[in-house]
Length: 156
Image 1 (cartoon, one colour):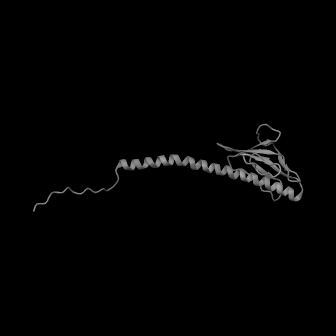
Image 2 (cartoon, rainbow, N blue to C red; image 1 turned 90 degrees about the horizontal axis):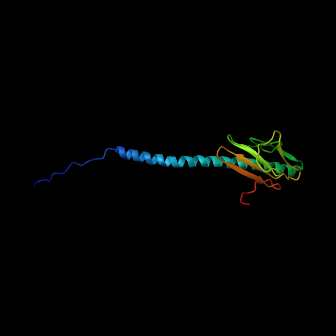
């Protein structure tokens, strides 16, 4: 009985250079797509949190004026809203963001003036005001309702 010659069995001991480069190229493409999206998402979240802080300050001043019947003032500053009353939190903006103001009688946004404030009378009513949070790449508008001190949604 004669045996047929068989070729020696080839075993794979590793990946070829081409396979490694292909895997690295795929990873690079995925990182190139996902990193900018993650950074943008983080910036949007900072912008939303800043807007929420400003709204909380306005609401606290509104409720404080309603409870006490005494006018409450909130200072307008490039870095946010500065509380001038106990129990009303500051609405500070994160680093890299600035506050701009447009009062009811004004046609364009501007930086807050020195000593400028936003007053809530004893009934909690305030001047209608629009605040703009300006970041390096994006901005957000917050238009406040003079009766409730809440931010008016953009679609209204």
